[in-house]
Image (cartoon, rainbow, N blue to C red; front, side):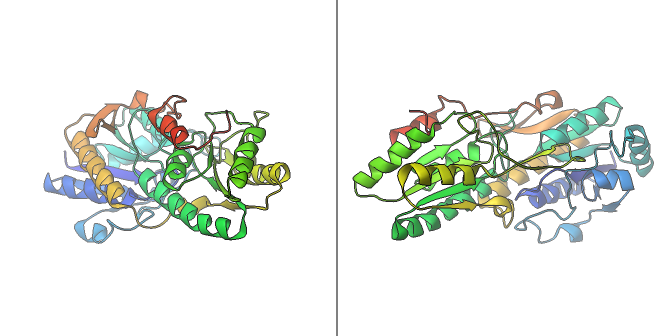
Length: 351
């Protein structure tokens, strides 16, 4: 093998550059050149690429974002109503690309599988701050995201206590509650509301009022963006017609804040953390995990072990079939982490 490709697609996550760096370093050690495709699948469609030499990856390990750019639009198999898959495979073969490494989430892995079916050798690297991919124990970017959310809770705690307020923090996570759960425990939240566990406003309000009677007239509530109202509805901020993930969640924090203020009589403020969770330098853990993923992905590509996705299983780096990559991993109701949170007095609004 002489040349492989790599791209970063979907939402950005701290650690993307660490993966790219590791792919290039390991490939170069084994005598293989790496070509990077720009702005996710847009680079495949618009034929934008560049050779990644040692100089191009110098100093990128601590950087957030991605030097290749990314996008969660431009599906190659449905671009402006056209299927460009076969054309892209031809373009990559003309470039001498013998395997393409996809760094992305479930949508990107789905595209990787479609290219594999067209005869293009592919390898996947799981990426999402939401940590919701079922084929791996953890995705890089998650540790950084929960660190940011935890710091936000630490800061909100002091102002909540000073003003005797309820502070509601809305965090990312799509349809799962991993970020809310872990940051909520680490940040000392009093209530954690996640999509996997239906909640009652009355239950949460009673817990907050109980704290007030115990001499703690303030509370911290963490809510995942995908949490549903007691009526079972998600709060949608907007829709993006040309994205593979059309729904943009957001606004549940404001719904919860208004209702809790009404039920408790305590002044309430809402903070939506948003894309701050995606930005900035990755934590040491995410840098290491991303590097481990990148090295293994390069070796899979060079050793012609195609149709595989890198994964973390029981703290060991391994790989699984791409067909397993699209399985979502919700927070189990009976998980040890949920039980731990309840044991230290955190309510999920269900009891």
